[in-house]
Amino acid sequence: MAAERQHKSDNTHGSFPLELSSQEAGETTAIAMDMDGEEGCFTHHNTDPKKEPKGCFIPDEDLTLPFAPESLPAWATSIRNGLMNKNNNAEPVVCTNVLSFLCGSNNVVFPLVFSDGVTWALKVPQGPACQSVFTPANAHSITTEVLTLRLLKKETTIPVPVVHDYCASMRNSLLYPYILMDYMDGLPSFRTWFPEEPVDPNVLETRRMNTLNDLADIAVQLSKFTSTRGGWPIFDSEGQISDVGIQRKFDQEIAFADETGQSDSDALVSIGPFETAKSRFLAMLDRREVPADDVYSTGTYKLLHMFIDWASELEDFETGEFVLTHYDFALQNVLVTEEGRVCGIIDWEDVGFAPACVGNLSYPEFLTPDLDPDYSYDPENKNQNSPEELKRFRVVYSDMIEKKLFEATGTVGGSTRTRKSPLFMDLQFAADYLSRTHVTMIKLWEQMTDLMGKQLIVNGQVLDDGEIAWGLAEGELDEATIELVKGRFMDFYNSL
Image (cartoon, rainbow, N blue to C red):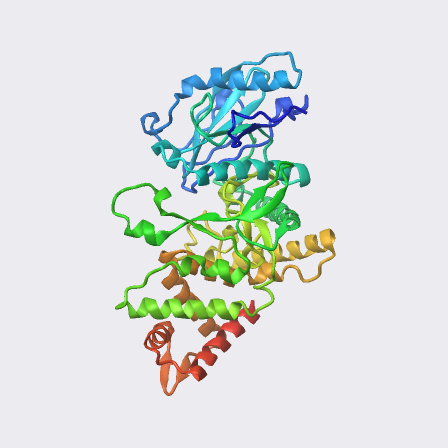
């Protein structure tokens, strides 16, 4: 094992020994990148220079980096041969090709092809670092991603890349933060979930079931990493999680108020660590300033506070446990084979310990679009599942979670977290994101009303979400009425 390389006194730089077998030398296994979900930003990954992956469209002149892609072959050759020498491998290699870069909202990935058939991925940030504001939080995000990938590779079978080298500062020969890792040869799973060409229904069903089964297995494997506090993981010198610290969160209120044209990094705020799920749910909501004359928002925030207070009385909500969670199990972050088997999970940069009620066992977001207030189903849209399909997939997924949890831990009833997660995820989104608060609260009240089959009527007056919000803001909602609202909330929770 090669010793970790340190760069002067900077502990944000390190490398890991090569772990490629002779078999793996011809078929690399992983890539990590952040995709933004827009069509055209994803590729069929391959390592054949004649069939370069097609990255999302960013003109080269708009790719603001302190190095030119043409300089990468020499740089990558030097890095890899240096690592190989440390592993007593005397056969030098040359980086022969840099394939088309792949981009996401926060990162750019350059596939690097070597003369021995190995392909690595160079992942660099595209955003704050380009504007010379690379902060300790940015550095922590890179280091956390690297150490998380290393931990998962060592202690689970979750398909993640081997990281060979990284630097979480500008102080390196590239003059830029980076991660060098294996490149994963896989398909973004939306291509097998929503194939462009007609597919036999039985084949499509098998693919989708394979993907759900593997994601359930990955979610259950993450259950072994728990903490009594929520936030970003802190690693010790042995690469083990030793503590939990603050995390950075995007504050929409700051972003919406900012008219200076500054970067999104200016809207990142520090929150945590958290001792309870309730404190995490209220962390962003309690930062907001509501104009005194905005009665509806004042009342809506009070109602959201009440919902979170009532949720905190539930064992499924306040479990006392936080779990290591990939916050974006979206189709674009899941790489699969042609058969739908998951061969890679990407974008771990914001991994953290989340309250168990919204953690690793929650439904992946691609199974819940019909629960979004803005959801609209178009039968002609081949990239949508019908509401009926989504309900069936959720039942299948929760059953898979139940089975795999029992096999792994002997736990019975473990899928309860999965089934209850939509309510708790709604509460968290409403509390975290200014743009989602009102629409989510309206949707929740409509769902509660639909469940009861009738409106809430008090003293002959129909109370919808607006009337309740107004009454709370003006202090005109009595305790008896509040108890009726709570009863609807609890009935809705019990129905899930």
